[in-house]
Image 1 (cartoon, rainbow, N blue to C red):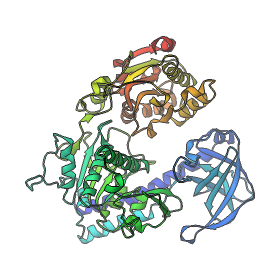
Image 2: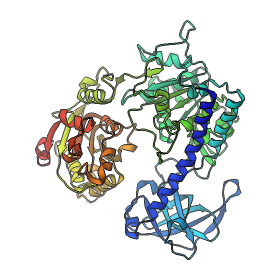
Image 3: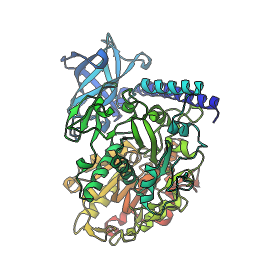
Image 4: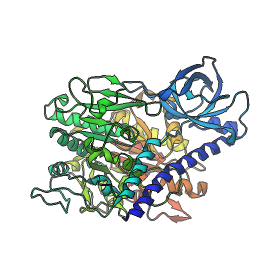
Length: 624
């Protein structure tokens, strides 16, 4: 890529964040232009009533004034989980939201008169919420929206620095050059001191060796479902740390890096070693005000001292050899050039290329791990230029859907799925290149097939279906009640199905909320304790013996086909079905499988129905 093209690309990334902010605000304004009842019925919208007169002024990061106050809201209003502060963590985690402000004492009749600000829910009950928001004179909160925007000022500054380096001809950081010039091959040395030209591995130990032989470069790993992406990342991190190096692990969310840390600990314990004797880590646990972070270290210390992460301050006599954080922290100026020996990007198919470029300077080498055939990088606008909206993996692969072995590593074995599930996933998403690992042939549901399609009939359901919710619950009830069903794992162990072995998935939040409500209203709701209900978007990284995927929408022609296009997306179907180890159940109508009165020939959902055992609603009792 010529210098001028590189500069245009980097400038497009700067434009990307500006365009996304405009699209974000436009979406919020559109959401306000609805009648009050529709706002109240929207689970991503919290309709505030009045404040409780316990307002107080506080000083936030950088001396900015903020207000803390409580507001009542409509009791019983169905709200999404995004509003709930996360109390499951060891440390309380507040919920970031967008506050819609209006002039004090005036009704908000026109969305253009509203001001949108980033705010935090710091406490919530069934009828009131305690909120912290920035001071804007003569304005007060009227609504809360779960969708929030975090400013990218620091990232924009890093991209501008890159532009200056390119213009001056002084950009010489290997991994960054690899990102900007897709014609460059990874620089990884073999045992003879030559660069590796073919990354086809014979055993997983080859991958660990290659990671330690990276020579100022970026190396990509494509990992299909169940192929051990998290384990590969953990082994790579341990290999670098054991050699005296430092590792940063980043992902779109905090959970992805945490999974790697947990796997590192599991590996060490399996080798009968104490994890704390091998590595010391610090992780970002809370993001409140902009650039204000709190960290947790292995010994339980809670601190705001970022120099611990930078390696300048020891904790219990040790430095943080492994740092887990999102790009919002790693872009901080405390991390200079090559602060880490290796930067690992988890779920790189959801990680924006601009996010990576903003932090690429902090590491000598970069390992990106993801799968472009699974959930992709989400953008709010379609107006971006020069590929600035691409994910890291999409940028690395270019027009390919599969990573060629000359460019990186394709993890070709799945350790998760039964034979029939793996065959379906491999054929529909990986050109038959995904293989079942040894032992997976033992995985099965005793007395049941691995692929089941439940055919249902209903009309005019868009994003939720009472009929399908009842079907998903009835299947779960049948599997859990009475003598119960058993499944066999890849070690040959047979166990009875528990509620925690079942995962119910849906494309839409509305359907997830409906299924949860139906279970809570059920007289035998205790039977389902431990059962998970999630949207597909939140399920990546999860595996369960049984997955029930309910698409909810009645007909592909509803909403001018927009919902059907969303449901039929290949990456969504891949993630939904591949969460299953022993059995995947698809609940859908015949009508959702057709578009414009013609079968959706390339739809993986339709292909699933062709190879699955099909039953009707009335057969649930006898079949399961």
